[in-house]
Length: 200
Image (cartoon, rainbow, N blue to C red; front, side):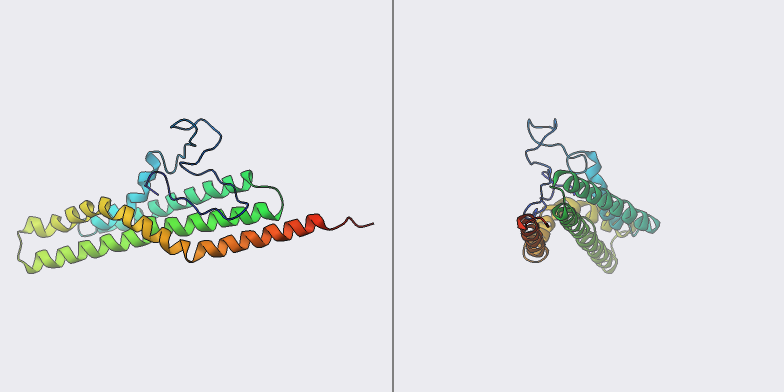
């Protein structure tokens, strides 16, 4: 998403994925830190698209659906990137596919919640509430028209980190332990397979 470093996928046992802010190969910014184009560069602002769309819903309702399409395209690209890294940087065999699945699931769920669903719903409700208040208060026409949009845009920077942390907290206690267990089970299976004597 948009924070720096990007959301740290709690990589299960045996899954090696170089994330934004991790030490890795390649000439990234900040010395030995790996540069992640999806989280360290300007592309990360694509994650704001649906929040901006929700802020402009009263004025430009036709922009809302395309803004969500842009946001989900960003989520999909980052998910593909993290899955590809996991696949190429993990050991061969079943562990490689399990690591890839874990990275894909964790990234997609985190990004969908923290970049699209939760902030989009939050801005939607803020703009809706602001519109109702402005209308009932008999505010000037310009305030009724643009006030909710301005408030929605102003709230976006304030909700990013709290939502990021809330989603992290939730996944740390739900999805990620399950992924950890999956990876551990795959590691045990692979070790057991390696320990079996070769057939005569």
